[in-house]
Image (cartoon, rainbow, N blue to C red):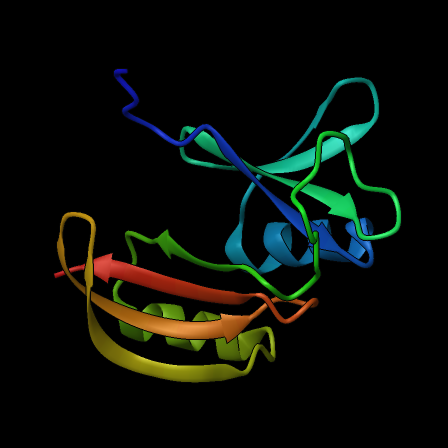
Length: 126
């Protein structure tokens, strides 16, 4: 098998419009529509799909639960600018800036929670 990339992830949420608004406005991710009326946000070459907890898209994980995801988004901005941007949107910083190790080396990261309490790490490579 020759797997080399992640195409998309699916977040189970309680309100798709609220999640789309958060990811689009706070993280500046473009919203796309696919399969007729489903919506997602683009993150580089990948996307984040959203499904409602009470209306999941089959097939579905064993226990689709809002607030159970923990993911890292890579930004090109310096960490001070990211921190200022998040505060301008009144997004609480849960932790950071802290040093972490990502898939390609050392990161500087800030942690926030989305509207469903998923933990979102926003990082840049040193």
